[in-house]
Length: 397
Image 1 (cartoon, rainbow, N blue to C red):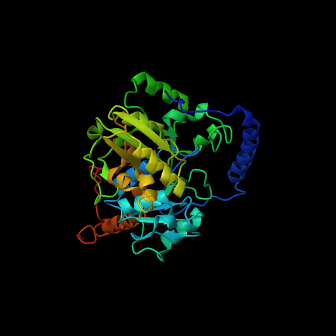
Image 2 (spheres, helix red, strand yellow):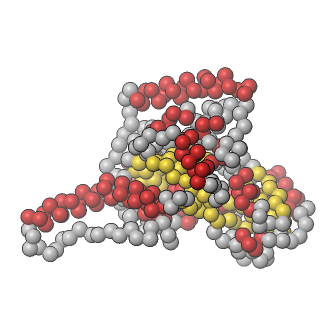
């Protein structure tokens, strides 16, 4: 049920109260315009949360990339958490993961045609992306990854993600809970998505969740669930386990290796397929050390055959160049890609909302309007007509 992963450390509630005062004061400075938020002429869509990790930001950003990339040039701007570089950096296909962080690296490897940049100062990052000094092609839309609290940028569209299993109404502020901001701060979002929903939710449960979210009329609420693509070997030249989809895990002992914020839903989803699940979980964005590699090798070696290791795409970015993984581990290590699917037939409405915003606010729409105005004055002219963009079958490869 919703809220079932929440644990509150009541001893830390006084510190949460102090933390709340600091967050509230900072937000007040923005509301009073003492701290300035900047708007941009290019469409900017922010995807974020008000909790620490685990709401599924990357799969939702990737959904937006798939939706828009066939017709528009997409740029993704991230902070690049735990990267070893500083300042602004535009990724190339050869940029190492350590220079930009695991999630930006994952997106650049999957979508090589888009721009992926990192910068802790998002306003500077947007300025650099739009300046033309770094990119070969002008961006039509910028997706901000994990930027709900980065209020120096005023996005044209703000998407807030809420984990079904960690409903914000039951959580508490850091450090007692995992809230970055008070629940009322969700009011800044244009779109709220309840993520990681069980596929078995009943109509009554949807109504209860909708009431609990208590959104304003200007906010739109959606529900998404996790879907999984086919498994692929991390080291294809060495792989010797016959697995491709989840069904092929039947009869096998699965060693689930993760370094993400919330692996519990993944465990729940894999349990119906595997003979058994043996999770080894590290912290989010974990940098694997020699002792971790030894532990992985030893624990997998102790598992009875037939067996396979399953990991996430984000973890794969940090595992692929590790030295010391045993031959057995490398032969059995498979990556499970994750996608999101909208529930209650919300995909069409969501896609229309995103596409409508981007086209209405893009530079191209301004140019097209000017051409239309000129054309009305010269109705006999058949040249210089604005390009018509079709978004049929959006969100599909």
